[in-house]
Length: 395
Image (cartoon, one colour):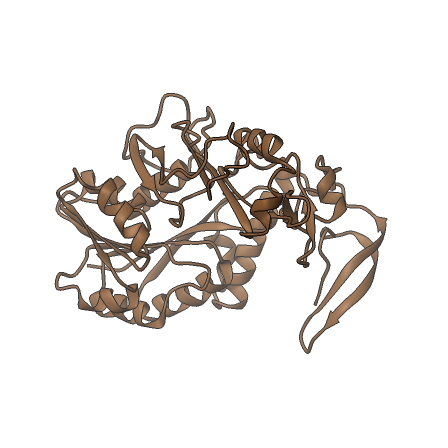
C-alpha cells in the first residue's frame, strides 16, 4: 500500500517515493496524469504552497464525506474484524458551509519578523498566514491586526492561541499581546454556549472547535432532540451532543458516567435527563472549569483523576457510560472495568477510527452488541474524523 497525500481514489499519477517500510510506503504526487471527477481547485493559496493545516481541499465536499465513511468502515473491518462494517457505518453528517468553522487556532510566532505562522506539511518550517479559510472570521481579523508585530514576543514564546466564542462573542487570546494594544488579550477564560448551556474554559482546557451554528433541520440520524434546539440553528458540536444524548437514551432514574469529561460538556447536558451524572477527567484545569460550569447542577459531580484509575473504584454501577478519550483511545483498564460493571449502554465518541475499532472489538468480545457507528464531519477539509459508536447489552 502506498500513501500519496493530495491524490484521490481512481486517479492516475506519477509519484515520487519518499519512504518505504515493510507493509506500506509514502510518496509525493509528482504529475497528475488523470484527475478524478470529484477533484476541485483548492480556494486557499496556502494549500498549494504546502500548508499543513488542511489536507483535503482538493476534494469535493461530498467526496470528503464519502471518503470518511469508507475510512471508518475500513478500520472497523481491518482492525476490529467486523465483517458487517459497511452496514454498521451510517452516512456521515456534514456541514452546510464547510469553511470558517474553527473557533480556535494556534499560531507559531516567527522569531525574526514576529509573524503568525502555520507550518509546512510534514515539516517544522514556518509559513506566514494572513487569512485562513477554515478559521472563524474573528480570528482572521485579529491576525490581520497583529501580523508582523510580534518580533519581541517571538523571542520569548513559541505560540499564540486565539479562541472565539462563536455563540457568545467572547474572545480569548493567550498569552497577552502588549505589542498589539488594540487587540484584547490575556483573558483568563472564555465562555461558549451549547444547547442553552454555558461552558467556561481556561486557556489549557479542551473544547470542541466547531461551534458555529447553521440554520438547518436536525439530521435523520438524531431520532429525538432531548434538549431544546437554538432558534438560530445548530452547530456541529451541538449535533454531536444531541447524537450522544439520543444514543444513550437516558432515563430519569439512571446514573451515567461521563468518562474523559473535559469541562463537563456531555455531563452537564445530560444532568437534566438523569438521576445522577459523574464526570471523570484527568486534567486539573478542565475539572476546575467543569465544577464551575456545574455549580448550579446538584446532580452532577466531577472526579479529578485518570479514568483507568477512577472508573474501577466507583461504588455504584452506572446505567450508561459516555466515552470520549483522546486519540490513543481507552486504556485497557477502562475497558476491563466496563466489562465488569456492564452498563446497559455505552456511547463511544472517537476522533480516531483505528483506536475506536480496536476498543470496540474488546467490548463486543466481552458481550456487547455494536449497533451503529455515526461519522460527523467536525473538521472539514482535513482527514480528521469524529464518530459516535453505540453499544448495548441485554438487561
